[in-house]
Amino acid sequence: MKRPLNGEKRREVGMQLFQECASNWRRQAVSSLSFGEKLPANVYDNTVLWKCKQSERDKTLGITENCQIMSHSIFRLHSYSMRQAIYCTLLDTMPVRLSIDATGSVMKKIKRSTQKILSSHIFLYEAVVSNGAYQTSVTQMISEKQDTFTIFSWLTLC
Image 1 (spheres, rainbow, N blue to C red):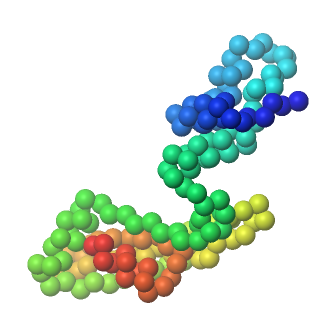
Image 2: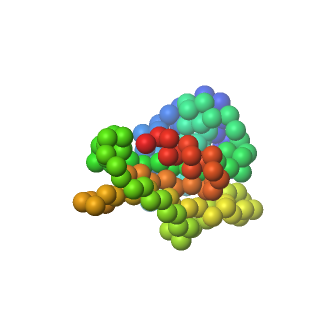
């Protein structure tokens, strides 16, 4: 019978898992065993170790929302390269044309729970500036939300 991973041991294992993956932790835990020996009760399944790592990471980051649907209901990712950041600063100094496009065919929907609830469509937004001499991408956003405020917030970052 497996021993539960609770209390101080759970915290200790969670901190160790910050530095490595669950399979490596298990490999180290059984390194002293010979082939054919039974696993001791304190060698936990990967699912237990993953949950332990997640709960320790949540504690460290101050995440208190346990509902998977609510914690992922706002999904947004912005990215900028150094070159794009430089072009964003130039937008105020020269006349350029800004074009924005979005596509929903780049990413699959995310499964959010054990009931396999799917997210909304996830769109990749791309903003491109151009003048007569050049054209370049200045920012991208991956977002599940397709509302005006989300797009406005993204564009005000640049």
